[in-house]
Amino acid sequence: MNPKTLDLARISIMDFKPKESSKELWEQFHQLYEKLRIEILPKDKLNNRDIFEKRLILGEPDYHTTIWLVFKDKTLKELLGFCSFDWCREDSELYKENKEIGFVDIRIDCDYRRQGLGTNILKKITHKLKDKGCKYFEVTTYYPSGMNFCEKLEAKLTNIEAQNRLYFDTINWQLVDDWIEEGKKKNPEVKIEAFFGASEEQIEEYCKLMTELENEAPTLEEEDGKKFKEIYTPKRYREFVEHLKETSYTLYTFRTIESNGNISGMTEIFFSDENIPEQVNTGLTGVKSIYRGRGLGKWLKASMLHFIKENLPKTEYIVTGNADHNAPMLSINTRLGFKHYLQRRSYKFTIDKLINLLQEK
Figure 1: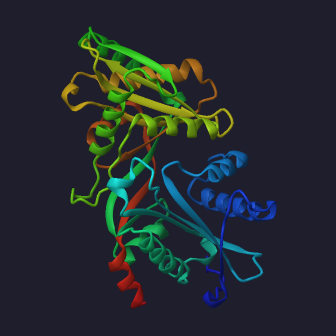
Figure 2: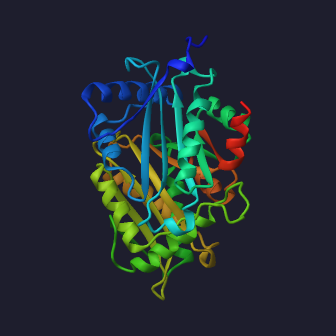
Figure 3: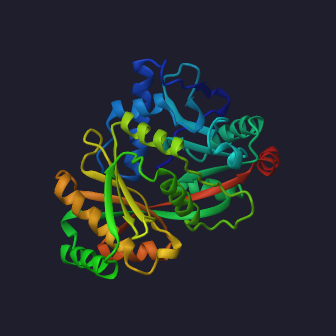
């Protein structure tokens, strides 16, 4: 399909302030966001608009966020795209390690791509982030057009991941039960604990485990001091759980406890009765390095599947995200029946390098 004609000299960019925006402006935003979502997930149900609005109004606890809306002209009648850029809050636990890294999301209506609009927006964002002290920013995209855009601008590919899905009516429950029995047999002194939300019991140790597992997740980026570093503390973990609650999601976690009381592994899900209740999202799953090779990961995943079966009857499918090169987790998920559904790629831009490149365009 040929793109619609666009005059870059006439575009109008405005700040989008979720708390203050009119119903008419929200309606334009919803319509474009949903069009873009249908483009990559044509069979999925759309998000609950009220929950979507609340999430943007609340913002992310660890980040400053700016959102721009991009209109065809000053009449503000035709919304062509939107973009957001985030950088760490100074009071966030993440700030010290990640203050030089920002995050950018640019989305353009498919009818107006490949006419220079994304580059025009990126020029403005890049200078804004540099003013905030960022030296790099990351972009993650599901869109082939977004991948081509990043590669054209010489961004560094840092990860290739996939959204994988397991449809509930395809689960091999005999295999699931076998994994539970195997886990119990190999680990007779290990017990499994389950809880909703943030458990205060051993929270310090739990946060250390989450930090270790997050930072062990494989990427294509070498460890050169520029890689984003996850840090969980009790304060940040509580804020994360509270943020989920405020946006109508529930967090549920299983963890394995060794005979000496140490936490050896974990898996978590989050779900909402109000926003696509047919979908359950998996969160962090992993086993501490010194406890691997004993079937704990399989035991945890299998136990969580039984919890979903017994307690979340509306579930039709489970979504997980894994790097394409994360062999251990892909092995577990593939045997359970997870199928590749949608790929996404992450890229890193060096701001000074990009500014020089854009000056030549």
